[in-house]
Length: 574
Image (cartoon, rainbow, N blue to C red; front, side, top):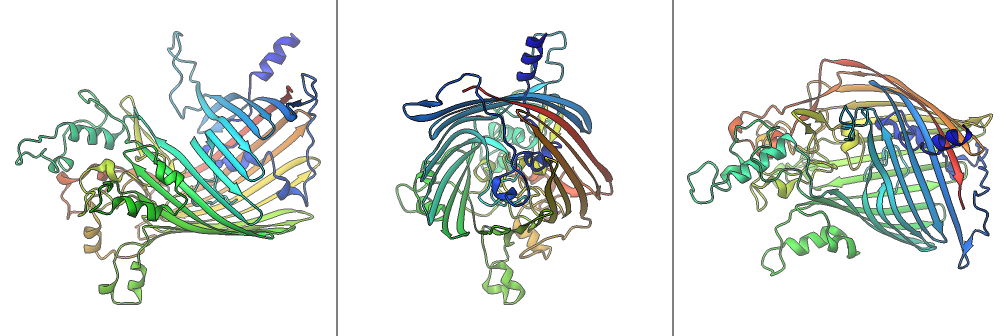
């Protein structure tokens, strides 16, 4: 009996959703709190690290450790769910390997197939959360594998990488000295995709139907990019291939450190039709210059790639009793915003694409208090679009570089369309474009219980970072309606969202537990709807990316309620 209980315990893992579900990863991650955040108020928890296998913990003079974690949790998020998982970590000096999987039945993804009467594992599916190898030296750090990716700025509203820590294949190299740090990172977005989706099924269908012999044919290039095939979007019969185009992302960080403050420049490039770009990764120059070097015509090495360039700055200050930060993101920079003050004849009317984030924390004897704010203008993370008068027009795959993990807002499971939420699809700022957000939080320990609470308010307009111009097929038609320059909240309705989240956790030696709850409301909540294409374009001539649906405020309201509870066990093996 004891052996059975022990095996059941170690076959479970508290990885999963130490959260109230996908939207509140940050709550449960406070289960383990950094020393820097808690030095003033939280008594550190000491885990009994007596190993199962007694050794001198060294090999070739290097310290050697192996840890195992297992756990189980469950809760409610529109449906009742339970889950379990496993994690193992092994380190030898500066080298480490880790792996983490989870097992869930929250109906978020299709269940795993199995040779059982129901054909699946009772509604459960597996997730590979992390797995890879790292090297952490004094000045050099390397990570390769599938890992949760986090921004350089420690904020719930980080701009370049989603603060929820979305897992993806990555390769990262970082050099850091006393005063300078540099990092180059690649993140795989889509590769050899087999996902059926409305817009990209249509893309493949139009491409496959192209008549390359008759210039008068509606499917003669480039006409076929605009000619509706008339086939049901979920129907993949007859398609030779389908799925998202291959896509990848490179991010570089250049930073300076002086005493307790840091300042840096962040450079990002997102590209389509290939999953990896060696030059972006290896050349330490800003990728803006690398792109122009490669795409300028009249040179034998010129390419036809048009990549999305995003750049920005960050600053942070870490004092003993308080810290502060600020971050700025600029995409496709133009001087269009100056049209408000100057003659627009001299400046482009292009929307200025901008996002910002700022905040800080104060550490006191009665706990840690935090304030955070962020926002993003409309179209900030969107691609430029295929129906554009330029070198890269016509082929939607060339410009599928919206700042999202997937270039869509829906995908098919059978004949049913499943929505991709903004927060789980955004590479960067988790609320996406066209919104402002505010959060206050509090953290403390009482009788060794770690308590974290957050109160958040979000005001949001229409949002679809995969659709270039929402209800317009191209920018010139948007300008014709008088919408020039920077835009935000120019929607008939806006979503108002308020949410309170509470997480309580406790460590008992090798055993830990947590409980979390979220309550709130969404008023005029965002609903996914088809684009209302502007009459200038004519519905029959829409490009493929004009078929991507948009999140818009509606007349509907809803209650927010999520809760979860979990248990974990930590076992040092070596």
